Image (cartoon, rainbow, N blue to C red; front, side, top):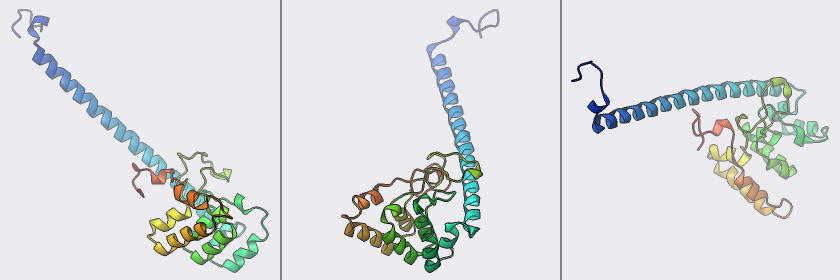
Length: 208
């Protein structure tokens, strides 16, 4: 600095210096903002993973309990399942901690013969995606689509993910052939959107 008092005076500052300093400041702000967003995203992902683990633990607990219909789907015994279902007044209310109904579970466990019988017997229920609400309040988890990990997933998604062409074809043919008894069934099957956190493009595991 050329000033006698040792301070930088306004007349000593040229336009190039101002532009350079402003450019550095702008780059610093962008860098800090990006780092903050990354940290927030990581924190959100960590929270989502812990939430999903809680859901899965609660679901596994339900499936081990013979008092739950889910246990009998998991067993893979269709005759026993039919017997248990005959004693239920409304199977549409049977939703586990992850938001799955009994037809989702048949497809989850790859019991496709059981799945076919359930789709044929309850074609409207088979169109339902994983719920975005938690029916069992004991797990202390919130009820919202942006929190439930598998919300919106349906049985067509499940067989597509597994690249099971035969099951994809079976489902599409079934709802095409039953368009009179199940109006808009094929459209519902094809347009369901998986919106749960498990399917978030920013998550560690993504089915895009």
